Length: 578
Image (cartoon, rainbow, N blue to C red; front, side, top):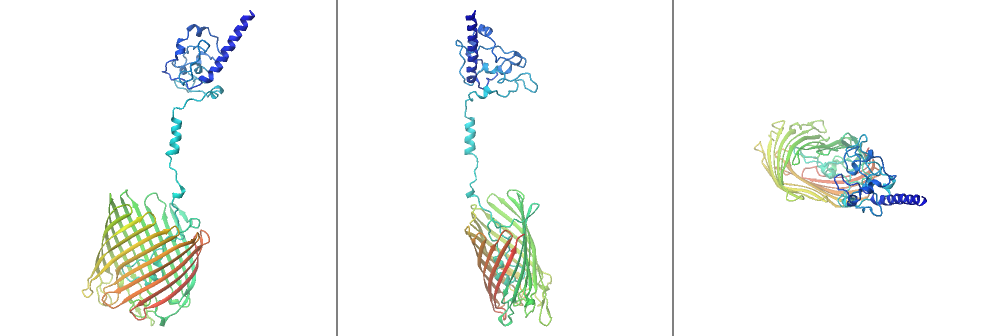
């Protein structure tokens, strides 16, 4: 009897040890519902299954079911043979694992609330965690490889640094289509004013107003001017110079389309020569609407306020005050791209008004007969040879109509003009951007005593980034402007500016430049040639405070008496960018 008990106890221990040893090797994913049972299980004798003792891992028949592939909830799974020395356990190949499927924590509990027909898997037990991991079939390796080879990685060394100007975008003084522009404005370097590249550590942050960024600025300068009136040496009256200047730049933060605006106004006060004190202002706003990928609409508004110099031939007499003149207008147009062909059509309207001048004895020089409107139409066609070069041809038609049909000299100055030009736009990466065009223009007048004008048209604009620290800018414009000189149809003007800006330090920039101005009056022997040289430095203490100093030398040679002059101007001021 004792031997039988020992034999039975040994057999039970052997069965329990075999189940524990076979469990980790068989703890793989359960077989699919439609997979056939292992061959070893089919060949096992039925008696072995009926006569084997119940294992401690067996559960009630109510929890057996779909995991073993025998139907819906509540079904009874047939028992399978435990591994023995005569019936070894099948190798762990990820296939049928009948013993593991009957373990309570490896099997779905069929019939539990919230489960599907196949059941919801339960959390793995400690035995499952200790089991050998399933074999990889390549999906995990593929995901790791795709993550490392197909993810875009941005190299910071290749990312461009966007530099914001210190105080918006100063505007060049435009060539007026109606009336002689202030020669001093061109010679004093206003045409050189372009944004100064600034390190982002010293760039102003601006003010956020909805989807717009506003960049205000104010500059107060003090200096000395040897010739505020810009007249001959016989009437020279130097004075202390006080300059107050305010600027406002506005740009949109839209994902499509764009709106920008820049405005600048200043007042020059001369305590020792009050008659030479004068204001000036200039501004422009541009709206671009991207209707489609190939169609866009453009709208531009502009204004200019300046003063005439006392020695101007248009005054015709020795005036004691500098009369103001203003010009304002708008342009609307559309641009359409047909693959590589670019077509644009723009219409413009501009108005120019002049203030009366005053002589020393109080007599007024009437200039209201110079007020006029100009209407223009510009058509351009271009072909994109490459993304860097786009040649184009352009036609410009305009008409000028005066408020007074006949001026004070009995002349009818209404006129029509046409111009043809050809050129190209060049954009080589971000280092060089240029637009150059040349052609001919013709202007005819209503009054037969005023002869027609034929003149060349040369326009150029270039920005060249020689290095990250040095930038070269060049601009040239030609045109035929109106005049009030008796016997002259108009004046052919040519203005060119050159500017070189270099950053000595992250917060210190120097700018040197020069300008050239030429006015040739048709029908009368009046010629004017002017030159100027400019040197300026900007030292930025932080984002909102900077120190600015400038020196300007200007000279003008004219065939009109008392019109030639030389002037030196020195200014030192503080600039605030809130």
